[in-house]
Structure formats: structure tokens, C-alpha cells
Image 1 (cartoon, helix red, strand yellow):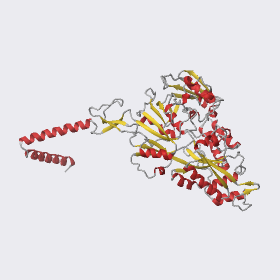
Image 2 (cartoon, one colour; image 1 turned 180 degrees about the vertical axis):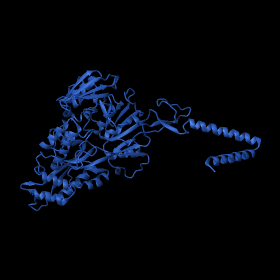
Image 3 (cartoon, helix red, strand yellow; image 1 turned 135 degrees about the vertical axis):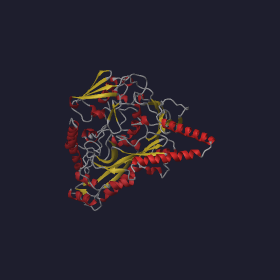
Image 4 (cartoon, one colour; image 1 turned 120 degrees about the horizontal axis):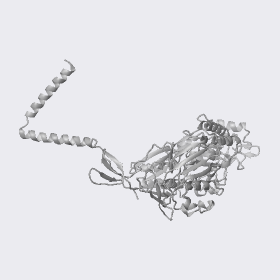
Length: 592
């Protein structure tokens, strides 16, 4: 029998069975069953029209988040925030740049809607969005760009951005077009264009030397997605509210409050108690086994590293010897530091250009932990324990130096491990903890140290010039390894002038090889950033390549607390809260 014949027989049998089944009911029962069948059919059709009965979450505007951070705001001005993470966090939400970084470190339009590149990378033309307003209602235009760049280029500007803007001519072609003319092609100019822009109408009357001290910095006016609502006189908190006139996507979150804490321990206690809805940390150990059921944990790998920076020109003759620096690198147990200090929440670093960034050299010379090799390097260089006190000498020079660091739990632990291991190869180490409030003015600005434990944030690109070129070794430069090496300087300069990425990378490879040989710093580890967020805050994502800790706010426009459930396929404005029909309003409460 064919398939078609079998189907026909089966259909006949089912039809006969149905007739027999129907005849078993009385006339009244048949009417009831018929009504039930109609009701079920109508309900089924209705469910299909509503997308199978499934609901869709739709964020609505409203609600507050409270962000806890360690430290205090100093200058809420994008040209002066580079050394203060708190200032950077807050300023990121208030100010805008010509362009911005996306989730994958790609460049996206911001104040500029588009840009063009001419003359093989020597000319950049940015086309500005029209109708942008400053938070105080003033109109934004190209003159604000010209003013901001002029501040950075001024001799009186004390910030760290100056060197990267020298020689660049900026012209307002018209109110919505600005042109940058570079003296030579720059591989990294677009990264510079992410800097926040200042309102000329509030600062132009001031001498450049006074801009960083202006009262305008205590209640800043920007063009970003949030604007300042209040700053407590005690500086315990800063409150921001969503900018309804924002030219981009207006955030769902209505209010962002920053609370400031003196220590990470106090911050973690705040996130445990629910006093804040968001907090960052480098390790979960500080939570002391607390229940994290109400928190979401996001882990990001940061483009920064903890390192020991060497001051070769500070008068310590021992550290001027390359063999000593190489031996210290060989006797540095990075794995132990990562295990004991970060609870394994980091990876060892060997290159000043991190993996994932342009120019990283995977084959760079590595100094694996090896006491025997370290002692051998010192012995061959002429270092001996002539007086039998356990410490080495070379002629009249003693292998002795100080190790300075910001006084906190992690740095103390690092210093203890390093000093113990270095003393085991014959070095006399004096540990010098520095009060956090004194670190910059007393130690970093005057470069008053032999060795310094410090974490360096690489920012939005891999250009290492500002961290390793000899011109940056005095304040306000960011180069903490005080040295002069012609080879390193030349390669960093040529990479900036390369004009194309492949040529720049070749110079960066040479720079890294020279770095590995000279050991101007002992790179320790690249930390992870752990972001703890109250589970009621939705929209935070793991899918971000952070360039800085501040980049956790890259997609803050997508975060939400309040939402409604709509039947699938139904359209409803997120600005309208409608409690009728099929809409269900839900409010996830938070502090504030």
C-alpha cells in the first residue's frame, strides 16, 4: 500500500472515531462542548496575535543610581582630570568630546557627526552636530573647540595633555565645521579628539593659569548626558541629573549620585549594606564572604599595569647599573604577587604595550623568576659582598635603595614580597610608605624616589610616548621611570610620525626590545576591574573593552531601573507610563 493510500485510510478511521465520540454526548452536552471549543479557539488566536502570550521588557525613564568611589573630586574639568579617577568618572558624564570610544574601542561620533581625513593624515575636518546646547542653555559651536585646544596649547597650561597638542593648528571654518592641521601625520590623533570640550563663554575671560582654579569647576557646565544638580559643601557627594536636551540618546536613569569614601574597605562595606548601587574593586576578598545574591558581578581586563618605576637619574648609583635592574627583574616573583595580593585577579605583564593594543610584541624578552640567574648577573657585573653583611657592593657603591609606594593594603603586600626577594639576592631595601594625600605633591611631582610602586593607566590608545619618553620625566609629565635613552626616545618619536599603522608598529617593536634590555621599570601585572552592581540596575553589560575604569559608563544610556512589560509586538513610548490595558508598570527601588 502506498503512502497516500495509508494516509487516506488513517483519515477515514479518525473521522469515524470522531463521529462515534460525538454521538456519546447528549444534545445539551454537545452545546456545552461546542461553546468550549469556540472559546479555546478564540483564545488561541488571541495568543498568536499577541506573540504567543510572551511579554517584552521596555525600559522607562526614572530611578536613581548611587555610585561609590574611593577618593574626592578635585577639579571637575576635562583638561585637568587625568591624575584623579574620581574627577574622570564624574567629568565623563558631564562633558563630551568631538568623538568618543565605543564598546570595542572603535571611534564613534559625539559632538561631531562625522569627520574626514586629508593629506595622508595631516588634515582632519570635523562636522559638528547642529543645535547642541550647553547645560546652562548657551549654544555650542566650533569656537568652543578652538578655545579648548588653545588652553591645552598655552604655555600657562599645567596639565599633561600639552605635549600631544603642540604644533597642531585648529581653525573654525564655520560654526559647525572645525579643521585641524597637523605638522606631520599622527597615528593617534583621533584618540586626542576624545578630550572633553570646555564652554568658552564661561572660561574665555580667565587667564589660562586660573582656569584649573576657577569656581566654574565646582559646578561644571558641559554638553554630556548628565548635568550637575548639586554638590554638597562637605564634598561627601555629587548629584547629577539626566540632561533632557542631550543631543544623543537621553539616559533612562534620571539621577546619578556619587558618594565618596576614604578607603576601599569603606566602599565595599557600602555596597554590602546597600548604601550604594555600584562600586568597583580589584578583588572580591574585601567583601569577606558576603552574600552577593543581590549583586551582579562584571569583570573587565583593564589597559593598565602595576609596575616598579626606576629613577635612574635621582642620584642612586646602584640603580644606574643596567645589571642591577635586570637582576631585580629576575628576582621579582610576579606569580606570588598576583596570587597573594590580587587573589589571582590579574595577569603578569612583560611589555609596556599590553596585549590587544597596537604594536604589542609577544616575543619580548621575559625575566622569569630565577634567584640563581639574578645572582649570576650581579656577580658578572662585579657586585660582591665584600664585608660579609649580606648586602652587595661594587667598589664604593652599596646595593641599597628605597622603595616608595602609596600606603594601602595591596601596595604594602607588594613591597613586602619585593623587599624580601630582593634582599635574598643581596640588595638592601628601605620600604617607604607614603600617605595617599601626600603621594603626588611630595613624591611624584618632584620625582623624589629611588623605586616607586605605582599603577599606570594607558587610556584610549597604546601610544607609550607620554609614559616613557625622556621629555615627560618632569612634572606634569607622566613618565615615572626617570631616564634618558636615545634609542627609546627616537623610536617613540618616529612611531608618532609614522603616518600609517604598520610603520608605527615597527618602531614600537624596537622600543619594546630596547625596554626589555634596559629595564627602566619592572612591570608586575595587569589587573582586572570588578564592577559590583545592584541587581535592580539593568542594562549593564560585560561586552565592553574598557580603556579606562571610567569606560564602565560607556553604555549608561542603556541602563535602567524602571520598566514595563508589554505584550510582544506591542509598541509603546518609554516616556509614557500607562497602567491600563496590557501594560504592567514595575519599579525596581534603589536608595535615593
